[in-house]
Image (cartoon, rainbow, N blue to C red; front, side, top):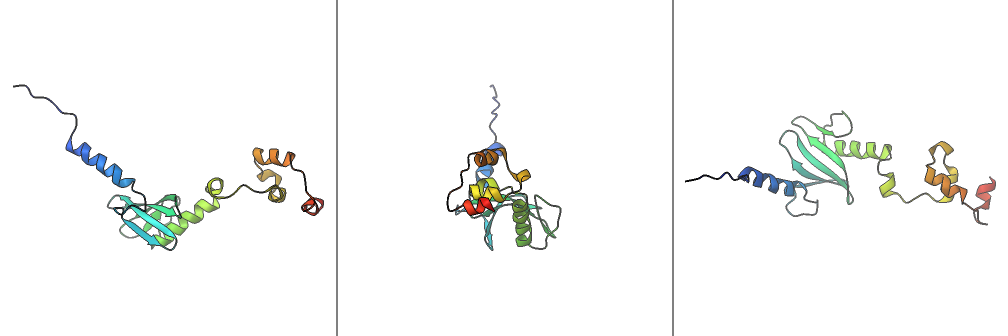
Length: 144
């Protein structure tokens, strides 16, 4: 009697199920969600630390970790007493670095670009300014 080796195991099947659970959006009824002041924390995995994806509005901004004695986030080395503090620290860091600027803000108007320091302008913004023609409404801005 010949024995065959099956490469598919129960452990692999459980791993596939856990991958699906990890990717649950915060709107899924099976997702473990904590809501705190404008954010949704969605449990991903882990026991110590527990890992949560952080959502603000409909965008994921990063991850935070729940340790036995404190909370932390993925961007700084600060130990926070509460989940809200770790979440706000993560959000503040991402906003400060401009990480979300390209995806959440509308492009600057030509007039707004004129107010930027020239070192802060991107190549695309320089190209837009080369083609800029002031209108009667904005000519006072250009003359100043």
